[in-house]
Length: 110
Image (cartoon, rainbow, N blue to C red; front, side):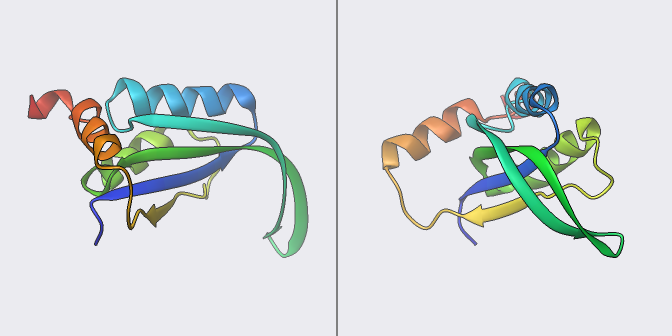
């Protein structure tokens, strides 16, 4: 397992995307959250193909924080089945990784 991950989620409004980003950052579960939007998502839901405008969040964090980050996202996410995907980071700038470690240390670890 890699030490760092990029977590991707989508949501149906800019306001909720900002709420998710704030929850991740304020709880020190993420070093950075990028919000991209709008995007068009097409997907199967309840037996039919749906289309929706969504906002995509890319969250940079440590693997060890994934469960807490997932809980924080779910606490403010309006979807009953939100996309929360962790993508492994296989290589990167060591200084960037050090910065992630520095800013994502939860207050309980200080």
